Image 1 (cartoon, one colour):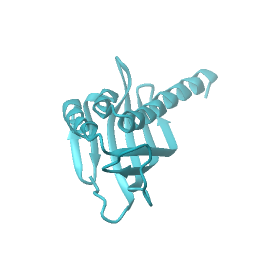
Image 2 (cartoon, one colour):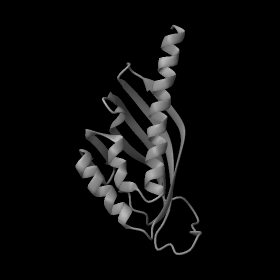
Image 3 (cartoon, rainbow, N blue to C red):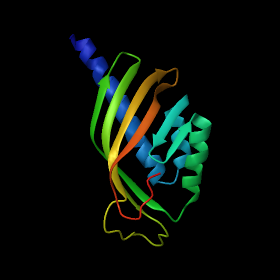
Image 4 (cartoon, rainbow, N blue to C red):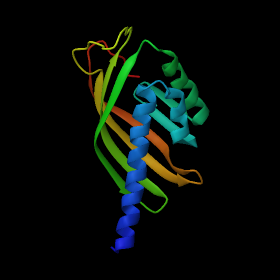
Length: 150
């Protein structure tokens, strides 16, 4: 592998990592409807309880999350691994831990355990607007008793 190839790979990996981080920040800081901007026009977001096909469906669903202003969440994404498949496609895997509480008033939400722990499996593609998520599949490994899986 040449130095140019290694640098290109690092740039792809970093661009995709930034999408993962942007996703968490938009949801956790009150701009969840903007998550759709991170996806391709025909992007897919799926979890055990839901499937959203296309930016419009993603925007609508995440706008509902944004409207729930009494919900506090923090998505913690770790063990991020991005593989550049080509100069225009990459695949990613990261673990997530979702801390969430509803009916939050005040500065601090009190919870005794995470809502859920799992992984995101992502497909990223290079578009005219830069790197975007083509598909995000969320899988659960752990779910707090009484929590919703969707």
